[in-house]
Image (cartoon, rainbow, N blue to C red; front, side, top):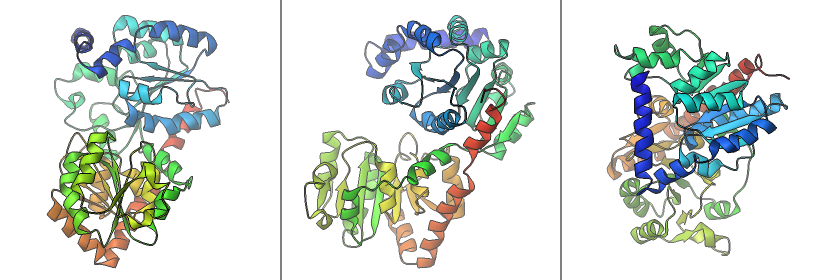
Length: 414
């Protein structure tokens, strides 16, 4: 693995150089300073933890239901949670479900050896795309089981290329793979791995759990009144190019709850200036008695989107015109038709599944959004079918967390 280790060293150098000009790179470098000293303190207090590693926030949401279920099933278990990305660590560094939360030191042979020797995990769980050779190799040397959960494989990945034999050694360090779909099982089987189970995506369990809490948002309820609402979640400027004309045109037929991905003042003001309808920000709506007179409720905070979908008859989820589609499962849990951009959703199995079933609709322009919305709105049978499809799809995919935790019981004390 000489080439692999060389790449890791280059990555380390790039982050160090980037730290002089980029805030995220700086957080990546600075956050790892002193990490072994802190890990040493943790290992004294919590020997033999369950180690859960996530790349960033998305993977955390997949690992979270497993961590919480392990805590319930094995009260004496301790959770060591690591992140690769500052985006994950900085947001979840105070997550109460873990006993210790740290940046993952870069995957060099010496750091991996030191990390495993120091923490001595009883079990390691890597979420989705996390495949680190030196860490998994050190764990395997010590007969510590390593699980990959909510993972998904595609034939264009290097593991499955004729020249991918070196990378396949990484997969050989894993004890078991809990994959999201049957295609992943077949791909792993094609290169000799049968230690697999079709478990699905733990995100279904997580988002369903959130929706079942029933937390009411009074402002959103008052805003909705008796009218139909179109909830727009995690939208970017590219999404608004499609949405703004649609919102302006449908101001008398629909209300809109709009939650931007970023809540910088400049972006919020740009949205308000683009709309020709009465718009109110969430932060001041609670102080007013006539919130129902507005047509758009602009969400200027972070953290409540998953609960806002309950107030909608339709949903639009942003991101697909840019780096990638955001979470559509939160909307699906409430059984509503879902729209999103037609560019960058290929990596998301749930988007493909719901399009094929008729519960989700990709759009490339305002004209397409208008046409597909009107098709649903003017045909009650099509609308009800889309609602049932999304609701049923979530129900069918629950249970991944239980499968994983049941497997873990052979390694953990009751």
